[in-house]
Image (cartoon, rainbow, N blue to C red):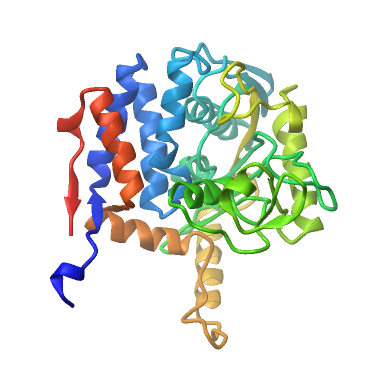
Amino acid sequence: MNKKNKKTKYYVNGSNLKSFCCEIFKELDLNEENANIISDSLIESNLRGVDTHGFTRLSIYVKRLEEGLINKCPEIKINQITPSTAVADGDNGPGQVVGTKAIEKAISMARKSGVGLVAVKHSNHFGAAAYYVQRAIKEDMIGIAFTNSEPSMIPFGGKKAFFGTNPISVGIPAGKELPIIVDMATSKVTRGNILMASKNNLDIPEGWAVDKNGEPTTIAENALNGALIPLAGPKGYCLAVIVEVFSSLLSSSSFGPHINSMYNNFENTQNVGHFLGAIDISGFCSKEGFKVNIDKMIREIKVVTPQRGFIEVYLPGELESRKKENRLQNGIPLTQNEKYELEELATKYNKEDKLIINLR
């Protein structure tokens, strides 16, 4: 290939990008612990290839912190109702900070009672739900994470957005095999996919979204002003209803259209709700025996003959684990627009020396 025609590619080391994000959050008066939690969540998403929930969210978090719409120093209160249930008031803190405290409480209750479930109110966007179930996996527990969000998805058969993408995440520890990690929106794609397409001036596939009039669209900007389509039609819609109930009604948080927009409303807080859970496997069976059986199931799935057009059968979370291994070694790729966005933040907060972008 002629070098003159070779398109320049940009990469950034994950550790460097995490440190850069941390420095930005500390400039906004977040303490080191909270700045680290948010940054870790963002970059873990990028490393796993879930770029829609990675540093692409940094700018909007910064803007809402600057506007005082997210509490920089929340006093998170967790009221334990029973030995295995609690309600957390996030005090309008950063969603990742609130979500982390909630899953830690769920794990703590599960150690004593076998199960720990925490419903959360007064929070904000908490990033990728997989981040929280991974914490449970590290404790040899099954993790559960739901969250609602601003309305961006139509109820099946409707024209107007009512629910958020309302993701469902479940993490299951294994023995010698990789853990199983499910993290899926109840919409056909996440809103982050539309945002990234819009940022990079790309069209979206048909069937992802409708415009403000409820008509199908392939224009990302029209989709942002319209709504997403539920995963598998009525099935995704039903799952979204379940997530909404667990995430908002159990904690008396806002639901559906009563959640304020993160991107378009700079006057009001969001009041997002979450639901975090941890299950101690030993409350049901031998933890060691469970892991042996999980490994056995994983290995048997992996030897299923793939269909034409498929290389192999993957387990939930396997592709993300492989992507992380690659990106830890080779770095996180940036588009031209993402590079500019990071450089603008670096200049604004005088952190140019903290951002190292590599060219290839």
